[in-house]
Length: 203
Image (tube, rainbow, N blue to C red; front, side, top):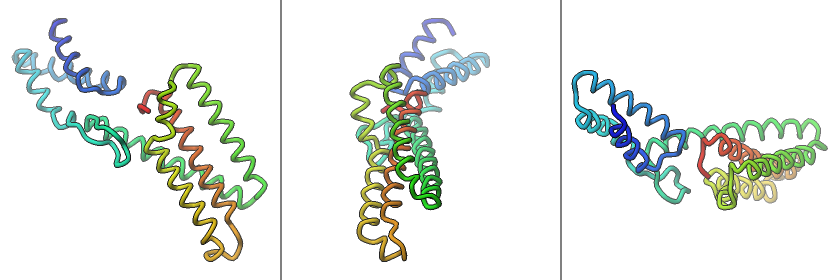
């Protein structure tokens, strides 16, 4: 491909509003696929059209999450969903491990919350200073679908701890249940900032 042909591909992919890391990856695939077809004797325009048809479904605009506002290309949504699942799974597991430590040694409750809060503040300040996140993204962080799920979980466990835990357990585990909800939410925020720092998610 010559420079003009490459610019045609670049302009097409920029119009799809992909995140930068994904844009670079898809661009490489487009170049490779088009070069392969051209090496087989096909002209640029015909090769470009065929590659676009191959990727057509991936560029359809969909909602990435039931709680998300706006639509993004399907390939972007699929990748975000995989990150959401990883964040949910890791946050739940880590919060569960911390809960186990708390049950074995109750005074650890306050240490865990203070420690995680400190880590979150460090991540947050580092992201601001290094310009990995701006003021608008700070606002979006607290209303991100994963964060919203965290808010709902905390609200749910608070209600369970306040009204139902004594009915289910012989001992009062209200404080532990509350701490689990807060711990889960803090870990979600930390992981969201980490993914944002690595440019894997757009807040």
